[in-house]
Length: 201
Image 1 (cartoon, rainbow, N blue to C red):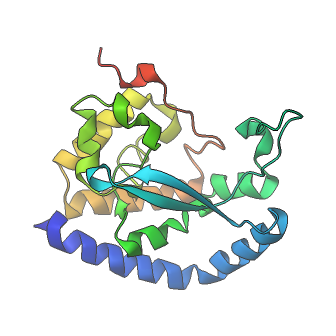
Image 2 (tube, rainbow, N blue to C red):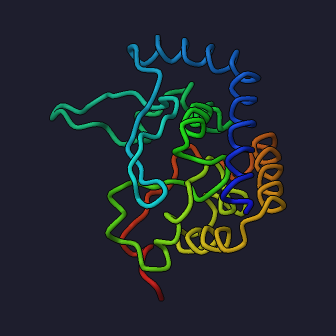
């Protein structure tokens, strides 16, 4: 009942509220990134959502497009800008995803959407993450974020799906706010998932 009806209503309410309240930050950041990133303030990337349906995730662009002499993009760590690093550390780069929530592609809380290239690698249990809408934040993000293994994150996501409730979502919401304020468990570059991370021991 909660997931089918009330969760979507809460997503719409808080996404609208967040966009209105954060609009000065949103507009200011967008203008700053427009000039610092050659007219490209946003980053778009296809990610799998509920039922593995692809959608375009929206984030503020935190890396430039500098390339080496062979025309290949430089490593991520070398392309992140000073403003981009600040946006990541404060999680402000995630604000545009409120638009994804309004569109119904994401929820405020749920498993984080990963790259579409990982779809063939999931075990049957790990595929459970695509039975719900992905979230801006989730149970794994408030329980270690970048300090736990991907296998643990996958299991945390499954635990969340199996125990989803208004009380649990409220707990995750307030823990997320606390982590943003205290800047804990934040890394400038999130570690990539490898083939080994999908294997069951």
